[in-house]
Length: 608
Image 1 (tube, helix red, strand yellow):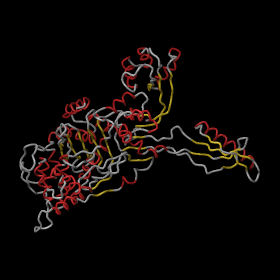
Image 2 (spheres, one colour):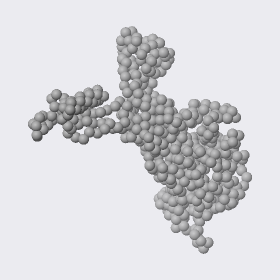
Image 3 (cartoon, rainbow, N blue to C red):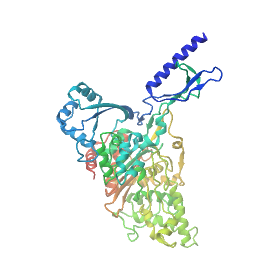
């Protein structure tokens, strides 16, 4: 009985070894080993148990597969002309214009001399036609390989790419001034979660005699582990819609679920197809992206920190309320001698009206009350007081997750910047600087820089009345949840009552007479709380900014939009934000805004 069992065990092992050999050719034979008891000589073997689908998939929040490892068909064209593009088009079901365009996209640069090897991606149906007609096309070479395949044209900076498949892109990038910059910053979740997506090989370590029969093992076997799927927080339909609104313009849009920190849409514009980086027939498109003056490969929401403009008045107001520099009933005169106000408006007799009209002098005086604030009535405005109050202001502002890396699951996130007293000592070359020399902080200009992720998180904090979960792109790894740090609640140093005091002003911004009243969604029963920003730009047209959330009293989505050189936040950024809110909350856009939507998408396609 024991002999029979041993025979079946050897047969089973031989079968496993055979299958392993078929699935992976990687077998390593070591120096023969002699059994000290029997004197038999055995061979140490290390057999890889692999699987072609070892890397996990990437899915959106609704379980639509966005990235998978699939069979890809490549058609290699003859190196020597002439090539009958009309006949090739008939074979593949393309017109001659499409054939020429696809070939041009595959060439590393325009005007490439004839004879450069070109491979075109084709479908399984087209591959079947090529095989069937191979006798008439002896110079065409059809090959197959398993590769990461993108099922969507949206979400390039989110999805990223597998480094092993991006070698052609890396070689191209080295020839460009910004090559290393892009290589470090465009990997998306494919790079950030590479170890979890990859899984691991399994290994058998049998001792085998000359007949191929096993006699124990020489090391502990390890099991094969399939790569884990990533379930993103992204809604791919909302992502695609948001990309249509930004298109070829420079800027970003980040939408969050404020209650969870899950990123619903993440747009870095100009947008591009995620398959471009690794596709074998997109060398020409990659060259255009690398050399483009608008830098489309820059992951703007994570890596580009800009002055936030007037949206930062929300933060300054919250800190001023917390430290007692103002109350919700505080009134300030719109004194144009202090700082100019962009538009005429009624007197801001309280904080709500100050936000509604985005009155620059109101927030100039709010910040002045903070920096020149005295501990008691007998104190005077001194160098030490200004330094101490600026550092106190900075401490409260940093509790919003600013001036530091939030810890979002994207590679190379930037920290942004908040100036310190020491920074101004050095920049002004004196410790005796006054509030007048730093007042730009009051309107979100000057030395303050925030990333798009920080801007969106700022809106989520106000929506939650003072707390947040770190924004993240992956809600589920395998069958588990997100990474543990994304379930930790963070609280600011501001009391919830002071955040609540901001909301009436943000709602008023979207109502008649407010800076963004044209972007109201009241007609569909949605109350939006928002704040516009127009960021002064000495090198060209101003930048447009907007942050907000909806519904105002039960927030389900928070959005930040930043459009470079687009002008007013009210006319450029706010419309994009509220369309994304409406699309997410209702699933469609009301007829009233269809013409508005079409105009924005048309401008996005034209890149202005």
